[in-house]
Length: 239
Ligand code: NDP
Image (tube, rainbow, N blue to C red; front, side):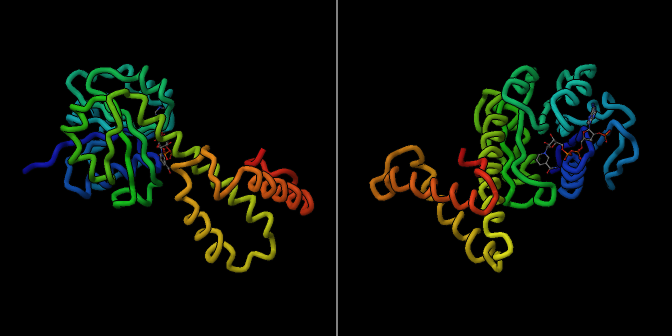
């Protein structure tokens, strides 16, 4: 069976990897980038965004931000096209942008991971578009449809990123506390410790008699005191 044709708009670090992955999976792929000269071997390079859009049934957009996506797509006739916007944005942006056969998405991965089973790509909006193109989109990683509100994928994407940045801030502070005494602290303690604490996430915010709030308050006060003693000031993530 012949593979669905795909257009990729935007050939930055992520867009280029998406396009290469579609090519590798045998999809006839057309690409367009604002600044010419970015090459994806095996893809057709369209001279304009309009020509790129007209070349395929599904148009994957992956540019810097919502403003860029609008600048590219607003002047283009999208009639009869399925648009899959994988540009990072807010739920409000996604809802404003949604029109016709539209799926918004969030890529939970860095480019090096694309095409591996570790990748989750979140989608929301048109269930019909998701069903029609899921096999094609699965080339990028695991596809997860989270609902027909176009803003939901962006909401979940940003919530997951928020959790990640919070964890990174804590880890960075931990490394600053340990400083020169690091040894194999990261591999043998920090990573296993963070991994082992994940079980607590579903009950966050609930009182647990095994870990009373008063006990935790003492530990947090001690972290703050030890950080001040080390000249690090108050850890931002505990404020
Ligand atoms: P890059 O900075 O590498 O590339 C940005 C792309 O956007 C380029 O193709 C650039 O074109 C294009 N662009 C910027 N402004 C405009 C504009 N006004 N009109 C048309 N095109 C424009 O970013 P990435 O490729 O890394 O990221 C793309 C999207 O993917 C972002 O929304 C990002 O959040 C998301 N993403 C990226 C990840 C990553 O690790 N890289 C991870 C997960 C999501 P030009 O070459 O002409 O400048």
